[in-house]
Amino acid sequence: MGFKAMDQTPLLSKMAIGDGHGESSPYFDGWKAYDQNPFHPTDNPNGVMQMGLAENQLTSDLVEDWILNNPEASICTPEGINDFRAIANFQDYHGLAEFRNAVAKFMARTRGNRITFDPDRIVMSGGATGAHEVTAFCLADPGEAFLVPIPYYPGFDRDLRWRTGVKLVPVMCDSSNNFVLTKEALEDAYEKAREDNIRVKGLLITNPSNPLGTIMDRKTLRTVVSFINEKRIHLVCDEIYAATVFSQPGFISIAEILEDETDIECDRNLVHIVYSLSKDMGFPGFRVGIIYSYNDAVVNCARKMSSFGLVSTQTQYLLASMLNDDEFVERFLAESAKRLAQRFRVFTGGLAKVGIKCLQSNAGLFVWMDLRQLLKKPTFDSETELWKVIIHEVKINVSPGYSFHCTEPGWFRVCYANMDDMAVQIALQRIRNFVLQNKEVVVSNKKHCWHSNLRLSLKTRRFDDITMSPHSPLPQSPMVKATN
Image (cartoon, rainbow, N blue to C red):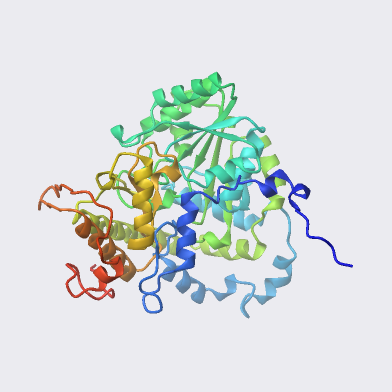
């Protein structure tokens, strides 16, 4: 006897049938467009290029060479097999002592060895995503809130809100001062939350910033510390891009403020750092997230909660060996900064040739690209229209500003470190062709001044035809070798 098909929705939880994950955001829509038609230089040269993913692939060769030269670092090789049983059976949620020691040492090194970190305060989690969620669980109850300066990483809406029930209250920052966080903006956001009967439990900052690629100076960090102490709320500092700073001014960790700025009051129990090896080392697949808290109760609670998202002991074992290799770490960090600086120059220089400007920055794996002059109107509808053209006709996945909660239409985050030199040149060629086909461009040799006759249509010809045409104003072949 057959069973009649029935609607199973009432049998599921609100979380299962809800949209709290935020997957419907345009931030993730761009990824889907790429997944459906991924670019490949030979197999699919007209596919969508992935420039919406902040991955650091510029130094993978250095890591690969180290692994080849240190086979004993893996328990899955003949050289490391003798430690297989001990490592494979280790499951203490404190983690391997040598791993915590190595991470504390690496965190200090990426901050210029100006400060030290206590290995006993290192709590591991499944990537920065897991680290942020665990921290939110420790600091706030459902319905309570964190202040977050905008624009901010879209994943925070998932990481901090979805399962915890915590709210995020935006702190307004805009281009009038290059999106710098101010005391006035913090006070306004805090007071608005109070007016809405929302209890603020903390402030979350990202330094270096995603999506801006900027760093917070000492004055701003002092303002932040004074503010959270005055309000008696927590401070969560996301520092996962600490080692991606490629030029001056250098990165300043919140830990340095606690150590150096003795003239301002600071309750260390209110300060917590989220770190990861996903960006600085280019290991997002290893899912190594770190919580470093100055609060003993948070350390103890977070360590217990980390049972739901531990880093595998095989990964811990490998990374402990790698991060304890001082010579390798020094060479890696120096070369990483050098390659990021070079890629930044190539990409922003290519955009400038057709009058596209970016926010001045010196960190991260991306630029905050200003396309406001390409909008038909200064509205988010126009931004969406432009973004859809870029995705579906120019065939580059970039992330629109409104997915980062930016209040000004026309800004886009573009990632440039997740591809090789050849792919960057192809992407630049596509962008240049699009701009040149859709604007009357006047470029000054000195100032790159330009004026535009705004049109979003690609006339009667498809973008692929324009790109590959022998009449294209740029090199015909997509296999353009990058200049060094």
